[in-house]
Image (cartoon, rainbow, N blue to C red):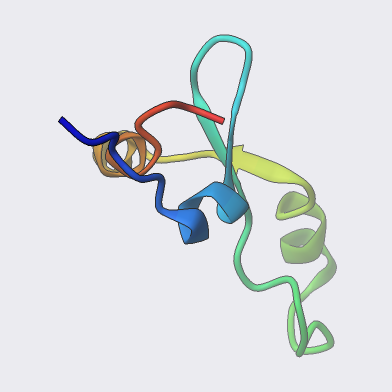
Amino acid sequence: MPKMKTKKAAAKRFKFTATGKIKHGVAGKRHRLISHNAKYIRQNRGTKPVAKADEARVKKYLPYGL
């Protein structure tokens, strides 16, 4: 059996925490920030965990972790 391939696009966008959760960068932080209020910008700083509904799909893209 050949090895499964990692989806490289997913490998660039997601990281695993030490407990096995998946974290991702938050959308909407690249440009047009003037139209967002300060609370939006502040709350979307850093990374957030992936939603439960999407975890299975992301783990399928990264069969060997990172």
